[in-house]
Length: 107
Image 1 (cartoon, rainbow, N blue to C red):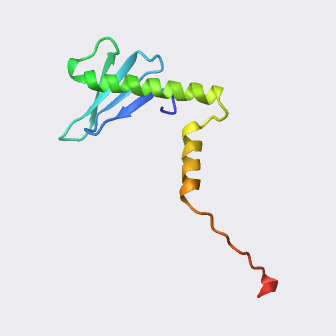
Image 2: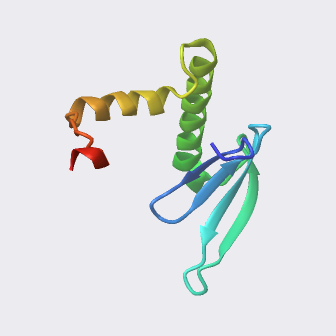
Image 3: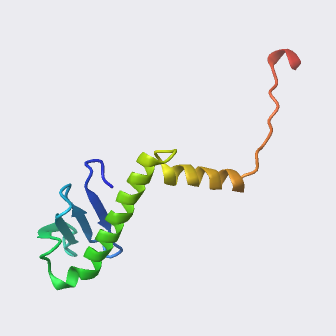
C-alpha cells in the first residue's frame, strides 16, 4: 500500500500497476526499453486489455490481502501484524547476548 492509500504492484518485468483509491481505476506502467521511461495507460477493473489479465488478477488478490490485514489490525491486538510477527521470529532466531557494563571507577 502506498502512502496515498493507493495499492501498487511492481512486477519482475519492470511493469507496474497502481490501483486508485476508488479501487476501480488503475494505471498500468510499461518501461520503454530504449529510453527507460515509464509509459502509463489508464484502465478500469472491468475494461482492460486481455494481456493484463494475470497482472490484474494479482492486483486484486494483493488488494484483498491488504484490506484483510488492515481489518485485522483494526480489530486485533496490534496495528502492525506483519511487523510484530517478524519481530517475534527474529527474537526466536537470535540468541540474547549479555553485556557487562564497566564504569570508569572499575578500571
